[in-house]
Length: 205
Image (cartoon, rainbow, N blue to C red):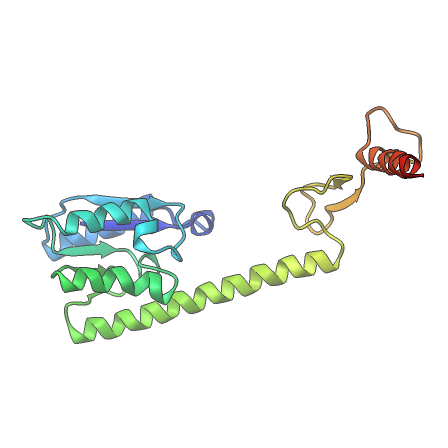
C-alpha cells in the first residue's frame, strides 16, 4: 500500500503525484512487498490531520478492517506524512498501535525498528522546520509588498480597483474614480461613494 500526498505549492515546484508514485512503486517492488493499492491526496496541505485529508481518511478506515488488507504504508518522503508534529505523528502512532507501519522511500527506513523510528523523528522535525521557513518567507514577501504600496491580493475594497495586475511588485490599489483625462465611460465606485455621502449628509441636514 502506498500513500501519495503533495500540496499545491509542492506541485508548482515539480513534486508531482506521478513522480512520487513511480518512486513508491519501485521501492515496493525492490522490497518484495505486494502492492495492494494507492491512496492519493493531491493538492492537500501536510498541515492537515488524517481525518481532514480525504484519501488518508479512507486509508485509516481500511487499516481497521478485519482481516487487515495491508501492514505497511509506503510514502515517498517524510513531508508526505505531515508538516506539523500533530499532523505527522497522530496517524502514524494510530497505525502503529494496530500493527501497521510506515516506510519512507527517500531515506529507506520504516518505523518498525528503533533505528527507523529515530530517522522518522528527524524527518518530522525537518518537515516542520521547512514549513516554518516557507511561512516566514511568504509572510515576509507579503509584508514587503504591502510596505511598498503593492496589492497583496484578496477581495478588492469597494471604491478601489487594481492597476498593473500581474506585474511583480507593481500591482496596487487606486481609487476607482474618473481619470484626470475625463475618462468616465463607466460608473466609478469612488464617485458613487462620494455622491452617496453627499446625499446622506444633505438628508440629515
